[in-house]
Length: 160
Length: 160
DNA sequence: CTTCATTTTGTATATTTATACATTTTTGAT
DNA sequence: ATCAAAAATGTATAAATATACAAAATGAAG
Picture 1 (cartoon, protein in one colour):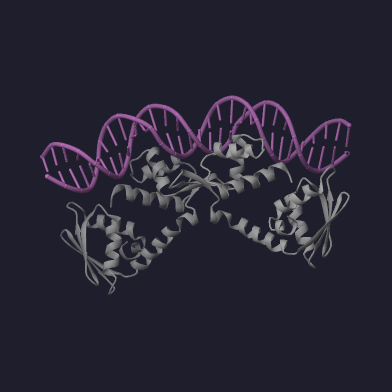
Picture 2 (cartoon, rainbow over the protein chains, first blue to last red):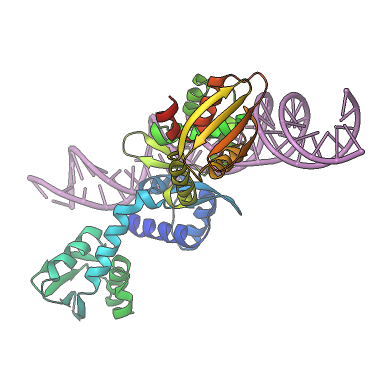
């Protein structure tokens, strides 16, 4: 997965879990996680993620992901969760991975993967219940697993 | 109604209707409406109202009142709207006003009015279907009508 | 009506956030 | 591989926002 996407996921995580009250604070958290970035980039990411800052009893202000705004996002999330249920199996052969799915699920899941544009994956080809995944050179099997979990968190149950 | 409360209602209105993208912009709107205030006060009001700023396709950023945060507010609003339906009539006699309501509504409506603490009103006494409203000296009839509409916007239909 | 306490507001400023511009990185086509 | 175009990022700074502090307004109690 591209770094930008990965970073934005991490930002969303940080905002959903912790209570963050400034970009500088978030910046430190991100750097602790190994991301290299500046406040400017953070500001842009927050804009893209539609993160908002509202007053909070305890911390004065906190960043949140407003519900209304986020609706399409929520829907997308539950669609992905739904599709993850169609996942059956993952096997490797060299720089190829083969995902087996429930009948009919393969192409939908492949689309989800393609849209995330994970760095680790060069491309996918989907049939009815099988997805062929071509890995980038140098990518390990666990790299791929991690990247799939990032895209479809529910896979953690089946792959973790 | 106290000025602060009145102002904050107007702010909420402005945010709900128009698309406002900075405090300075909102400040101008408020001043056009006759409010006297500074950016500092606005900042405090927005904090109190839990207004948030999120990115917007068109304007870059706009202020919004996030749904989740606002739920109790929404409920309160629809309660007030519901009660406004019980309003029947308004008559004046000197510095007194008499509101007639549907049976049983008077005390609930009086509570709504009292809670808003309108400057124009010194006090209310409610029976079952009648509210006696004692006006502050110097308050005109249309002052009172405006203040009631501010408290219960739906009354505009019946009083406007 | 005073006095004291509390709340609200403005002024001035510190903090925070967004963005213009330049640079680097990535992408896509040849 | 090489170039041109597009996207992402950092630097520096402008713009926007929050708040410390002082002053004014409001409210409560004698």
